[in-house]
Length: 259
Image (cartoon, rainbow, N blue to C red):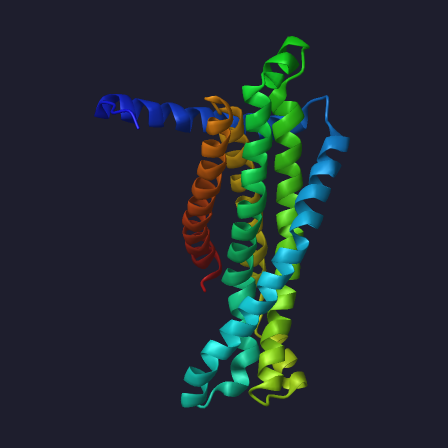
C-alpha cells in the first residue's frame, strides 16, 4: 500500500463521501422522472429476493432457535420460562430479524453488485453506455436500489416469522412449553411501535447495502484486482453502516414510541 500524507488521505475520504452521497441522491431522484427501467428492477428483485431466500430463512430459523435455547437457563432461574414466546418475538421483530437479514443480503448482494458493476467499469462498458446516451445511474443503480429495498423488507418479515418458529421448535421439543401458550405470548407482546421499528430498519438497510455496493462497483479501478478489492470493501462498509444505522434508528424509534 502506497504511503500518502494525512491531508491527502482526509481529502480522498471526503471526496468518497461526497461521491457516495451524490450517487445515493441520484438513485432516489431518478424515480421521479423517465425513463424508468421496470424490467431491470424486476430482474434484480428476482436475483436479490429469491436468491437470498434460502440463506435468510435458514439463518432466521436457527438464530431464533439458538436464542431461545440460550435464554432458557436464565429465564428458568427467574421462573419466567413461560414468557419465552414474548422474548423471542420481541427480539426477532425489533432487532435480530432486520439486522440478520441486512447482513445476510449484504454479504450476498452488496458483493455481487460491486463485482458486476466493477467488471463493467474496468471493461469500459459504463463509458460505452454514457457514449450511447444512457445514464448509468438510472439504468444500473436505481433498479438495484428499489429492488433491494423491497426484497429486504419482505425477507425481514419472513426471517421474523421463521425465527419465532425456530424458538417454538426449541421451546416445544426441549423445554416442554405449550405451543398455544407460546404463540399467544408471542403475538400479544407485539405492539405498534415494535412492528414499526422492525419494518423501518430494512428500508434503510436495503438502501445502504444497495448504494454502497453500486458505489464501490462504479468506482472500481485497477483491472481484475480492483474488482476484488471493491467487492471486499462493499461487504465490509455496508455491514458496518448497517450496524451503525441500526443503533441510530433504534434510538430514534425509542424516542418516538417511548420503548
